[in-house]
Length: 96
Image (cartoon, rainbow, N blue to C red; front, side):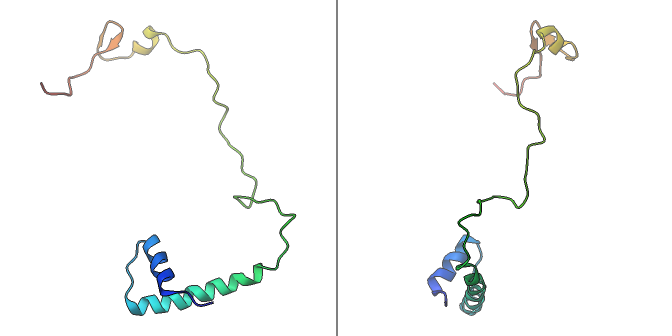
């Protein structure tokens, strides 16, 4: 199943590579050979196979994100190097 030169150029564009005319011909033949290898999978009956994104079972190792008791304003500002009332005091970052 030979690939059309337009298809080869489209694939090269998706891969963000530039191909010379010679490379287009070479890669077109190589891609066609790779696709032919996958033709053996066509007749396989996969109706009982559950689609998967990964070969193994993956689970989250992170805990559930549940709301909890927050810190008080005084606890938050307890280690602040500079504060102004209930706020952090920082150097100005904008010029007037």
